[in-house]
Length: 408
Image (tube, rainbow, N blue to C red; front, side, top):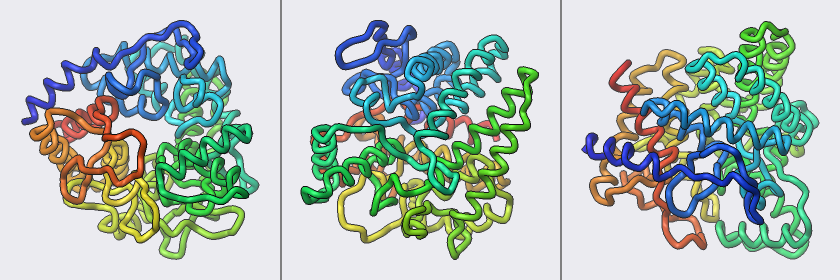
């Protein structure tokens, strides 16, 4: 079955490349061919999807296409001052996504070793950093997912979308609150999730701040490579780490999303608490705390987005669903701290669920039910009608898991 999945992936890479070089009414053009999540309902370059797609492209020997993808995103950041959810105009008006661009730049640079390219990318990354540190900063000095300004009509449309997708019925005076909450969740990439029940924009999120820590450490690395001052970036990362420990440490020692308005932590334990290990923010003692709690997040076929909970509503980024990006994040996180066997177990489980489902459906899917090992994940009230097939991050993480097992 592994050979069949590998052949399917190799056959479909080129089918998931799109070009949109000129501006359209609904989309901003980019001067590079870019990878889309699949060859059907997605025709744009999506931000954080692209990172996990690139992982697979690099392993498949398609480094030039991976670089095209990064150049497309750098182009948009340079043009707009931030990377939207995608280059669709509706996303430009509303939100970004988790800031994986510095990770993408680092992986492309370490392969091609092009310092001229890195110098240009470094300057563009400063624009993205400025966006998050001005438009997504909180009173406590940490970052929160948020949204761009919206008209009342746009707010109504977003509130209706949230109602349709989760089942939450809002009142007239909640429209703007629900709209900003929903878009902030979309910016997280976890659309939708019960992590932030009382307003996502009011939480300093663990995953976002871990990524921002990694952003700062990557910028320090780039600065050193380019012969520039790295201290300012290292200092920013060190300050962020201390703020994360101060505000996000819950009673059990886990780092949890922190509501800076109420002073309370989220009660939903999720993969977000693993991100500090993925980005190497914390020391070994924190890894041991996460390890003591990992059974709350693991099923027979992978890592759940969130532990099992009784929150009302339908959320696709919730138990029992396991998303490909989370499997890679958990795998790398535990390997970073010496828990290689656990990392391999996560890799094996992901390979297993992909192959089991592929045997029945002859396709790859955007997420899987990691409790029963199927692609039966439609617990979200959705207008999409059916679960979309997926190449992008599903293929990328699959190839990464196979590579990890074969080469560690």
